Structure formats: structure tokens, C-alpha cells
Image (tube, rainbow, N blue to C red; front, side):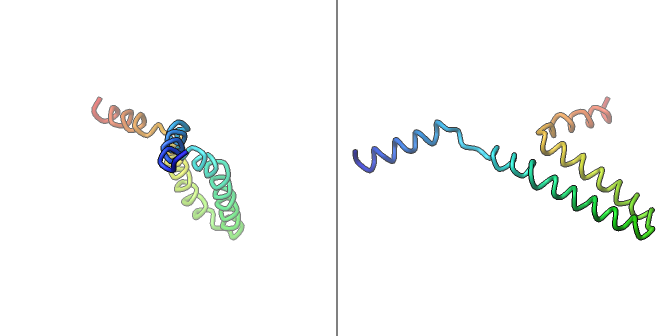
Length: 91
């Protein structure tokens, strides 16, 4: 088997697999996101322990907005959400 034939066979095999980023996205969603949420929760508890309840509430609202944006990005429903929000304005 020549090198060109082998390269063509390997190229065909790679194309048949349909490579993508689903594995990486899944790993980030399953590992990194929970660690970030845990870190944020610990920071919120630490701030609340100092008696800064207004700071916790302010950061909590920001966290909620960030989690909504993350949920939209991870689910892949961004265009549908955008269309819904546009229909709220335009009628």
C-alpha cells in the first residue's frame, strides 16, 4: 500500500467519524461548570458571614443573570430565546 493510498484511507476514515467538539463541551459542562458554581457558593457564604447581606444580594442577582446566560449558551437555544425576546418588543 502506498503512502498516498494510506493517507486517503485515513482521511476517509476521519471524515466518516464526524469529528466535533461535543466531547470537550460535555467535559466542560460536567466538570468545570460545577466547580465554578461551588467556588461562587463558597465566596457568597464567606461574604455573607461578614455581615454584608446587601453585597450578597447584589452578587446573587448578578450570578443569576450569569447562570441564565450560561444555560442559554449550553443548551443551544440562543436563537429561539432571541426570537422570543424580539417578539415581546415587536408584538
